[in-house]
Length: 474
Ligand code: HEC
Ligand code: HEC
Image (cartoon, rainbow, N blue to C red; front, top):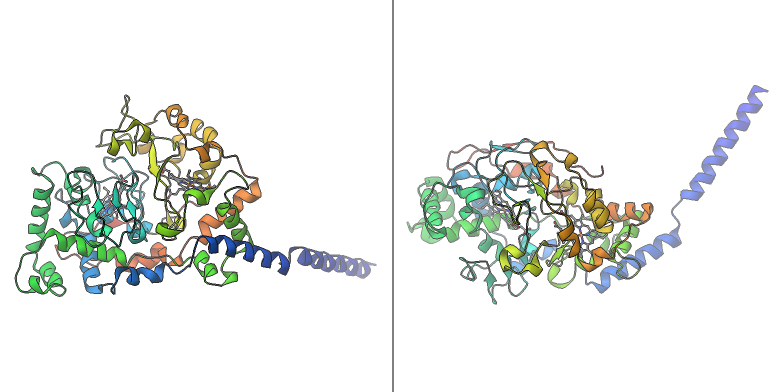
């Protein structure tokens, strides 16, 4: 009897498994339809999946690895900080894929740590990742550094910066080279409050300090014959080196790129479904791809590089060294800070969306530490903005939340029209954004080797905290 029963049981189990298998087996017809639909979405946008390979063609030359290496040392070296305690790597840490390790930057006056343990007075916004920034036609959260041709590799129409730089940096041949003139003169980021003098005087001082270090002169001399011949460094050399280092930080070979190049297995069926929702403007409100653009000047970076009002909750750090906007000094007016135009209040640039799996916080002020919340914010803006609580942030960022209603009054039309997605579709969009746009080469472990063993200045490197878990869903 027992054997009969167990045989029956076994038969049932096997039959059950067979049914389950048939049920869940990929259906070739469904697969083919998904592949075709996504391929068409990408085709009409001119998406190639080859953006990474296009770098040197766009530059019109090979990346100069010797110059990039000088740039790498400078990037990590507090010698560029007149306050002496920060470097580019303090806010764009290799251990967080060249993102900010905190939701809002901490610049001068920091404790030397890069990671969750970084402490000191906060600035106003989060530092975006520098990975792939070489392809951005406009830089910063308010797009205030712009290549007028909308091509960062082309200075023919000039590079436009706010005053005092204006268009004076247009002779640099890439937008990143022009950008590299600015962090070092920013008092809250790197320069500090002690040194008296304007931006040019600050850069002159930095150049003198670098020029006095024999090892830097030797390294620059390997690239520039005139420096080898004894001519003193100029700030241009430093800026060129920093830009060249950033040209080595392209990590844009993600599953979607492999799919676009013809590898149908590079993405899962759910990621493909998520991608189709992402790129479909009319079916329902999310319309992600309308702002997170890939075509033309967007260089397959998932941004239109235009500022929009998303009404992201305004986070006010307890300890800060910048004056915030508004009557309560608890707001960030975004683009209005540059234009003085009230119509630009609360506008921030559409975030490029690559490599988010390694990003510790989202939005211009890191208001969301979970990617899921950042995506949900777009779909349920009124609910999320009004019910926002600071409890997911670290205690030093929980001072208070700025006004919400004035932001909601001017929220972007597409966002205003958005509605929640059914759970299954929401998960597919999330899966697409998180996994199909992430290049494994942007993982901190792959970037660790970029940290120099020591610096030409002899100054100590920051203390990078490794092994930080990026919160994917919460
Ligand atoms: C105190 C922190 C801090 C330091 C130090 C710092 N940055 Fe940044 N960086 C930021 C923040 C914050 C932003 C965005 C600011 C904004 O939009 O208003 C930014 C933006 C950028 C961008 C534009 C990225 C994009 O997506 O548009 C580049 C490029 C950049 N930084 C390069 C550098 C370089 C090179 C250095 C060193 C010379 C440096 N940064 C030093 C905080 C920092
Ligand atoms: C109206 C234009 C617009 C639409 C439509 C839009 N976004 Fe955004 N998105 C933005 C802007 C602007 C930001 C940055 C806002 C800020 O920081 O204040 C952003 C930020 C994000 C971020 C955070 C990235 C980061 O680095 O912090 C994610 C993720 C994101 N969007 C995904 C999506 C998805 C998924 C959809 C579709 C459901 C979507 N977006 C639709 C404009 C848009």
